[in-house]
Amino acid sequence: MKKILITGTNGQLGCELNHLHKDNYKNCTSEFNFIFTNKNSLDITNFQNLKTHLTKNKYDYIINCAAYTQVDKACFDKEQAYLINSDSINKIINHITEETKFIHISTDYVFDGNHYIPYKEDNITNPTSVYGKSKLKGEEYALSHNNSIIIRTSWLYSIYGNNFPKTMLKLFCEKNQINVVSDQIGTPTYARDLAKVIIGIIKKSEENSTFNRGIYHYSNEGACSWYDFALTIAKKTNSKCHINPIETKDYPTIAKRPFYSVLNKNKIKTIYNIEIPHWSESLDEFLKAIKE
Image 1: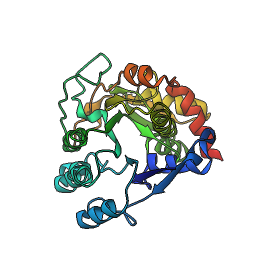
Image 2: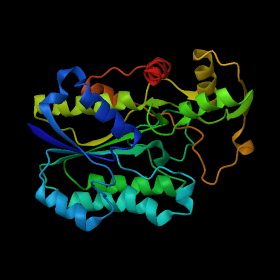
Image 3: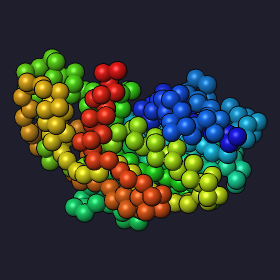
C-alpha cells in the first residue's frame, strides 16, 4: 500500500482531501495509506522536527497543501510568508529520497495579471506581491526535485475555511446591499474538484508507472469577475441583497491583485485525460454540500 503524506490538512484543500478519503472516493482511496498532518502534528517550519520526521518516515507521495495565503498581511510579514511558502519547500526536498513523488500547490499570483489570454504553464512569471514572489520561489525549490508536480490554481473555495462564497453568503444575510469588484477576471476553483484531480493523478501514476513531472494549471472552466461570481451566488440562493459593481481603485488593498488570472488547463486535461466542470456547475455542488 502506497504511503501518502498530506501537509496543511486544516486548509481548504487539505480538508477536501480528507473528506474524499473518508468517503473512499470512487473506491480508490482505500488503496493508499493517507497520513494527514497539520501545524500541530507536523510543523513544516520547524526544520529540525521536519528533518526527523522525513528521515524516519519514508513516503511514496507528499502532497503539500500547507501555505501562507494572507495576501495583504504578507506585505508586513515577509519573513513568515517566505518561511512557509518557499524555505520549508526547500527543506522538504532536501530530506526526501529521489523516489518520493512531490505534489506542490501554487497560485495564479505568480503572474502579474496583465495578460488577456489564459495563462499557459510556460508563460513568463512576474509576481507583483510578496505572496506571489514567495510562492514562485517555492515552485523553484519544488522543481529542483526530479519527481515534482506543481499545480497552480486560482480563486480557491470550499465548505471549509474562509473564502469568497462563504463571505458572500454571510453578507447576504446581514446587508441589503454590498459592493463587489467587477474589473478583476479569473476562475473560481472548487477545492473538492482539485482534490479529486490530485487523487486521480496519483491513481493514474500508479496504474501507468509514470509520474509526469512539471507544472500544471488547474481551475474550473470558464471565467468571471468577482462581481459575476457574487451575482451568481445570489441568484442560486435567491438572495435579495443588491450587489453593486465597483472598480479595483474603489476597493484599495495593500497588495496588488491580478486584473486577469485565467489559467489555460489544456496540459492537465490532455496528459491526465480529465474533464473539468464549469465553475457555475461546481458552485451548485458547493451550495449543496454546505447545506449538508
